[in-house]
Figure (cartoon, rainbow, N blue to C red):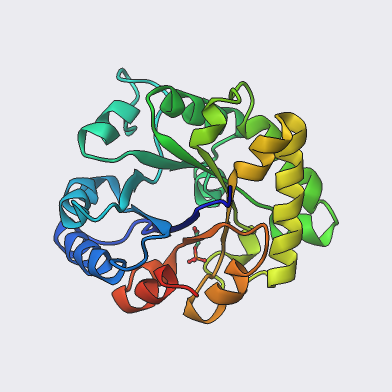
Length: 251
Ligand code: PGA
């Protein structure tokens, strides 16, 4: 079965609830005819409810940008999977490089977040990717392997149906530098074969792998034409209805 594409917008720390709702409504309209692909929006926690209202009935998936592993408790500053679901979110991102680099999140912590939220029935987007230093020292594949193995530790074959992997080379995030379609395809092919080795070939074949890092209207079509690129995780260009509308409607 061909993999269904997924175009995801990560709004990071942008937009108040009112502005987020307006953009969500515009994107729901822009995505109306894109019925052969999934669309996901990850606004800040504070705008989840507003975005859920804005996209209601459109089929657009609403996601948290992070999620705690526990249902509740003494975890100041964290949001639980149950709380996300309460606001209409059905998915969450974990392991974004900004969480890893700015907030010191470790592979172990990211794996706990992923497993805790899978347990609550959320669809999970696990972000991985190498830094420029790691790429230049020839460590890209070793880093990706470590992040995939640790990120997916103790995740069952059945749970893999709810996992999406996002390959985001850190040097391409917010820099305007996109990996070439060829560089992205090489990484995606490697990640897919690793998932096949860790699970079974069918799971490797069916897992969706998104590319992220300076995706824009000008490069989405070429990226999506690569055999192992199943979608995109878009930051900056997802904050504007016209540019994200074009990305959603990639050809
Ligand atoms: P960018 O961000 O599209 O602005 O490079 C991508 C991401 O961080 O998910």
